[in-house]
Length: 397
View 1 (tube, one colour):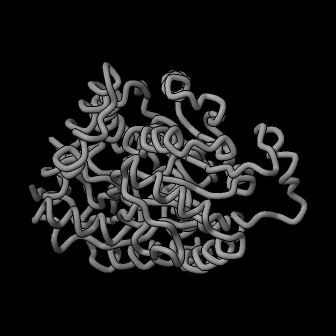
View 2 (cartoon, rainbow, N blue to C red):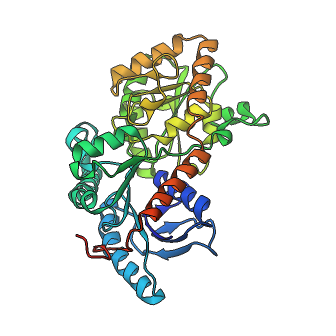
View 3 (cartoon, rainbow, N blue to C red):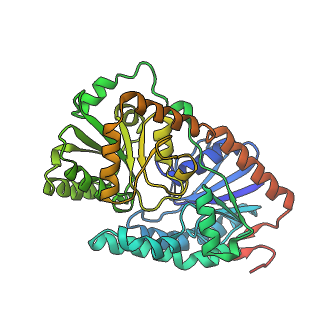
């Protein structure tokens, strides 16, 4: 089949983009892909075409608006110039025009209605974030109504989509995200002590790892800071991976105001987070809203005991006291979880981590690739007409 993929950033360090990269890598010999994206780490330029969409990447609501306009123009220009039609138009959520397949990693209307008030950032950053979510939410009903298929990464998000948009009831299927389980295992030659020293961690200190590209409020970092201040122990530190420079500066200031500035280490964005998983003693994510949480699965695959809230995706492997320490997404819940972790013997922590590692083995890359192969084969057998930005080429609206 000839497949068009619309996504803002199809790159390895983007959670959704990395999923699309794996789809492209695995199925580029079976199908002809054309990627319409602002950024794209093309794994095979000879087989995969890239149409670069010259949209600004910040702020996100501007990216959303300009991508919507430019993607349609570039799509039609590409079709006219190359005299091609597409069997499948695959888009991420409502980020582009309605096509054939909607790859959903977020339900913006549900998030705004149920979680925004307690997780919104302050100031202009909050306004910009709200505009981005609101624009997505405004177009979600149209997108879910017109697509033929919806793919979600977790059972929880699938339930949420169906409860929010009844028009998607018969369209949703789950293809869980992939984790390269073998790549997450710490190699025997990794110098853990040296890496911990580079993070200014003493052998006697307990290091908690917090990983997020951004959205620190939604991911629960304020709760971690508050709980750490209330814990009152100098031998517990938090390593924060991710965040833009301005966001990091903001939270450094928050930590300093709480008197715990020396107990947090902000390392910013990292192309490879694995050394941090291997060097820390536990993973923490008291998030209020997730649809899969790839980092929680990576932490489990890396053999870290995890303190996580019960959310979509995580609920599929996390059993309290067995494969994770489940915490409420608030400062009190984080504090209780930290006390439980610190009271555990080393053997108990290792047992919990190993059971978690075993539980996420089934989310491997091979299963992910096979699921997409089955999905595309199903579409091909349906014999759909080529899709267009106005709906589908046969005129359905």
